[in-house]
Image (cartoon, rainbow, N blue to C red; front, top):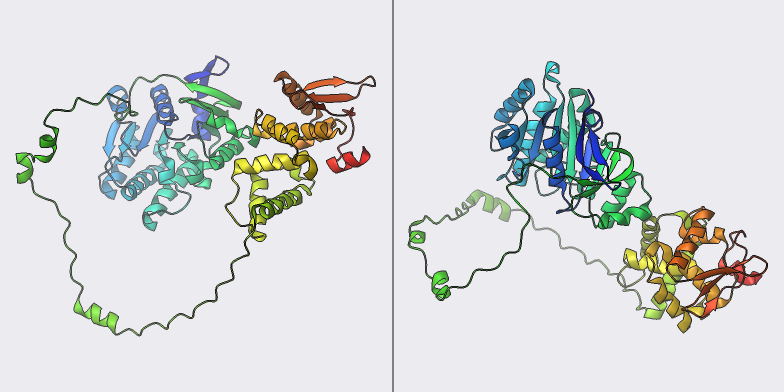
Length: 504
């Protein structure tokens, strides 16, 4: 039976439908920073699918217990023994009752252990009870961490093993995992990789944006879009959602969480006797028992004597410290960085590699060459890489006209600055207009059509004026710089800037 539930509206104004039957077979991953609307999305999914499929929610904050009032979910408190949790999970599968495992009030290690025991019990149910169940895990990075934390190794293994079973082997047992996380980088990769449906919300860290773009099969240059998503808006992809990335705005919900986002409210007027109110103790305070931590037990004398009788360790031989690298002036450091950029660009494939990959290569080269000072940020690296790709020579780089060109480049996005500066340096130096192939390489693509669209984009924003001479060769003028390129063949070959200058 095919059932489609309404998750909200798409950017095209149509209803965003999610196929429940397909979701049961392909699983779902939801990602977004705190405040992006993940819990609202999960609540919408649970409310819309409640009449059609059994549900089990692993709820670390107790936000979803309100589903019990309207939809009849059984609330299970996590403060139970392992045997109790195993028995409850077994009966949940036998009687096909929707439930919420509330872990509120437990510390992280207890939450991981209780969730792991409960999920493993559902996974180990007898074959005759393998009915379809939608298993929703909020804050999944807590139960399937990518690296070990401050919890015991036993609790981490139980929790991570249960999450791996849910996402990797749960489908044949009727368990369909829906996991939500604030950060993909903190979620175990073998757990995230098993999902075939994705709803990616607002996120700001580069590593999470790049992983989200990779999972959606999107160009990494478009990963910046995840920063601009509004609360409650997600990019959807997957067989149960959409065959292509589609922006979805999640619809309203019928129930609400017990905890809400903080709202500003005016402070109360301070009473006249505010100091007496604060510093005068309440009579009941004097009768309340004071809870103190028990003092540590004294160590046995035998342990102290055994420790004193151990041989003293040999003194460590001082290690000769390496001489500090010689101090380097700012000009020398900049020259060294420029040489590293030139080395990277000597690779013919560098133009078509993602900026994040080039940035890692650049950082490795900096460590090898022992470049002093703080490392460049990714944004600063992209700017200097755009200047390096422009091919500007040292003499032109010192002119005021080039400084004006750099200020103009701030009016375009980071991924377009290399193209803009390459055109600008050709105009400042009076070189022939770069061909479509040269523009495409500066942008990191092989498409000449996209190169022509970039020139059209610059012209639409009043940055350049594109025209042709009497022979049909292209000329690009920069009104703000008072200069223009020499006529150049738009269909010419892809040659380097040095070769271009030599040919001229």
